[in-house]
Length: 151
Length: 216
Image (tube, rainbow over all chains, first blue to last red; front, side, top):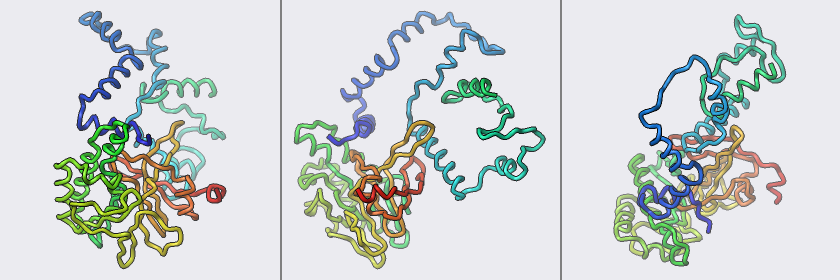
């Protein structure tokens, strides 16, 4: 059959949200991707006994979890469109259809960013990148540690 | 003017074109034992209604394969038949013949043509290789893949050059064919542009084919 299952899913979700296929899909997702019942039991167990603290730095126990961020991703239509917009902008800039952002033009003209020593390499600059807020989407923390290792 | 919902609007003529509605594809498969949910016609007409409200066209052109098979009209639920009839009566409605629907839909208004020709443009179901400039067609259900951040995004798209536009399929259950497939690529020997459908806007990329694709 040449019918995309996404299309059926969309149509059913709109017109017959209690359809058996959708219920089966939800049950699959709850058991297969994340063990929802175990998670629910854990939440029920700790309910009322959670202490929330904002730490001044990353706690050692949090490191494994932070490094996992971005390992699995759920694709959404909005996320896909951000990717498309980014790809479109990159290509348009490279082919001269649009002008690059102002900061990039400054580097181009003078070879340096204003008031900041920069050593250009084949792979970009060696100035420390501005601290990226964590966690922001796919692999932000991983990229940062990679830079430290090479720079 | 290309709409991100998959329609083409020509302001000067007040003309809205949609292609490959494939109405009643769900019930067509169901009759052959492939049980698909039957809401596809409803979903497709909902989206068509949105376009009609947005552009208020005088002429509506359905570019062929409007019904998935020739019995499609008779299987339309009464409510959908009435809705389609009302749409066909409220505009100058032109059904262009397609390979899935070689005969006119019974009991729905509108004109039935092999191809709809205006002074400058011709609207036909399947593109013709050597055509004078200004051809609007459907049939191929073009889709394309854009690489981004280590993954890819696949979407239905318009394909266009100075000579022609191939429209994406408008129907709810319609799949697609990659624009690099020879059937589509050979229509654009000098490349062109693709316009991927998005929620709010189109995403546009240039399209060029390595020559071996064209020879295949």
